[in-house]
Amino acid sequence: MAAMKFVRIAPIAAAVLLAACATQSREPAQPQTAGPEAVRAEVSAITARLPQLHEVAGHWQSEDTASIYHAYFDHGRVRYIMETAGGERTQGYAVNKYYYDARGLFYFHGQGSAGSEDVVNPHPAQIDVQIAFDGTGRVTRAAKTLNGRKVALAPGEAAAIRAHAGELHRQAQADLAP
Image 1 (cartoon, helix red, strand yellow):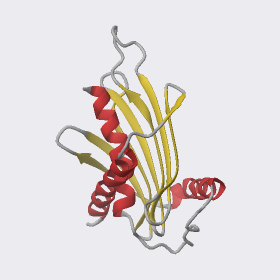
Image 2: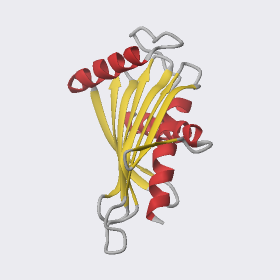
Image 3: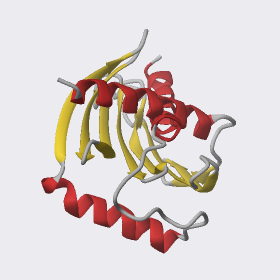
Image 4: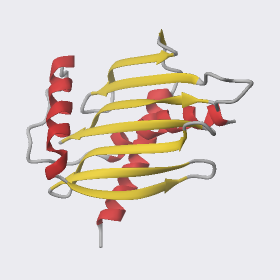
């Protein structure tokens, strides 16, 4: 059961950001087919600016999953959301990072474990997912590892991440409003 919670959180989280974040920004949009270097540069630029951005903390809840997030706004537009869910030793956990440019979600990075650490399962599966999106929401690059081994994204995983990213984005916008 805990493993399923992580699997739902990571894909859903990235999905929501792209779907809901077709926002405008004062910063130039990335080219439609931004290469890995451009994505890394934009991620680094956003990360470096976090102390200057307006932070809003909140909670997200579905029927069977909950998370805490910190959304960072630049002139009222979401630029970055960090979401944490679960507990490291009890049910698996996830730390998901969503990055936005003027057109919406352009990069997702999720890390965590699936399953609980106990006598039966002393080493829960470690998962790392990275997905880059273009301005239309199409996946341009994706990488996933399970216990350090490359694996393919599950069918619909990127779409679920974009959908969840949209839910988080809407919640963060609602929490920003007074």
